[in-house]
Length: 303
Length: 303
Image (cartoon, rainbow over all chains, first blue to last red; front, side, top):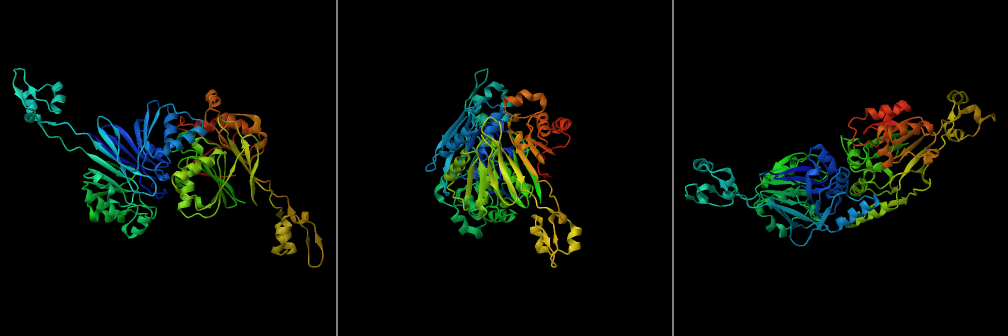
């Protein structure tokens, strides 16, 4: 099952050096999800050929402008381009008030249903589920109410043992039930136990998205064992005081969190405008957690 | 005196083909003014090296998203970058409600005064004046309340006749009063009439900005004789019905307006997403009014 994330924006607070405010597009089994939507996200999607029309769920972490100011533009463009199918939107409660005020004064009635669900910044909550994944909020510790999002694959199917399937000449229509754990009975009545035919599935993959937060162990338990952890790393560790003051994380801390929570892969982003080059941020994180990558705009990472 | 406009966005409704929603930066005598502020305007300013910090006045024509969704991001970035000096903002009355709601939920108190003045969409009004220019609103005819803006230089000084100044050896400190029309008395008491010393000034330049409007002669009188007329030209004339329905103008109509109102130079913009190439729009307008240019992003036009 495809599970990958494309970075649309990697800058904190203000856009600079060709870096744009935060946004990420997730492709899970050819279903598309948008996480945060900073100003210019729709332009970034055009640039990187991510089809906005394919997105059916948008998750907004908090109401600092660099995480949502592209949203009304995106929703309007979808409307103008003829969208009819519903859009699910998750974010802080006042988000819908902001959107409705702007639609009111532009005298726009969206041609598609916008299904809003407010997130709760105080406790983790299952907010979305389909055949592929569940999404839970991650209460973070920022200057204003803020949640991350934990995307988790549902348990995968058991894996067919190819040689066994060929040897018994099992017809294709039997595959789905066998993958779910059923035994197989041959035409002559011989029963083959599922354990003969399949091996255990891979562990479900999960993507933990921690947008803006100060270092705070309160959410570590929840992001434990992420296949990929995206964590903000606004500053180098020599700016730790500034990070604390502004409720942000340093690259070193992000890497320490990856170690502590047993992440397999760390992606850092939300870089301060003070860093023209990002090399030092990457090196600082890698010195603690080697399997770290920078969130580079336009680049797609397999979870 | 410098009087030029740089195009930051030339697209209507939705961004596409590397065209961005409407915004223009005016430089008049090294004072900077921003007209409209579509999503991504601050990124466009970075791209084209227009210093946002230099802008002291912003004029918003109306509350369709493609004309103002970049505003809160720009105001926030100025705040984060330490701006202290006031920003004057002109636009439809509800604009300030939208801004204040967004600042409230991001818990932001701007570090600089935002001086808002609501525009009146029903009657032209002088809304701004300094030593160089006056700015009047142009009530337009769009789906929602909308005004254009008429930037007019103040009467210029009379022009000194260089040979005469040299011949009489007039000291520099006398120049300003002579430029204003004063006579000059030599040390021996001889009076030289101003008309001997100066010629009439050039006509004041003016820039008429007509953002979104259906063809409607009601505003033609007000934009008469513009040195440069910027007029929207969303569609080709074969889409006239669609233009009327959506309260927009065709390229042919924009050119007819330039002829009727005696403009010297026409700049067309606000191009529909249906036109990948803009050549036909330009040719259609030029067939009626030859001195027409396309508003090209990043390009600066001398008024």
